[in-house]
Length: 148
Image 1: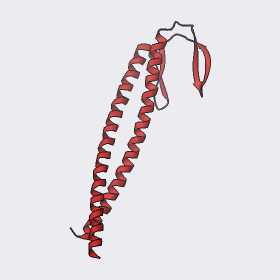
Image 2: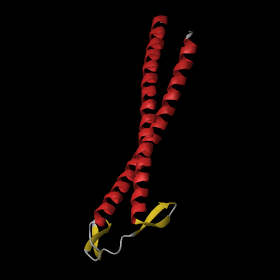
Image 3: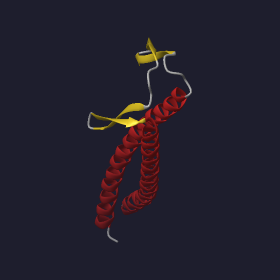
């Protein structure tokens, strides 16, 4: 392989590595969003299960954000309003809401696993490319030094 071919190959490897780093960044962002969604769904699931054991009319503290809570009384929980996406909410029976949240949680966890697997593959490819680029770079440098 000529010196020029080696330099072209090194440039190609560096370009591919940059693309892989960009893909890894995007996948990391997706993982963060999925982790946030999973956390929210687990909280909703746990809250619904905990509320089932509380009698209607009992006092509650309801979080309204920023560490601020309001006093309220538990009403009838046989119907639950569930957000289904795109700022749309649907009223569901309690059991259906618990089931729906469980299904969405499972889907999010599966998506998280798939994204994690993609990220691992890209990182492995990146590591391989880095090794090839280092060897090629050293080969080019030694050829340049040998030509002097």
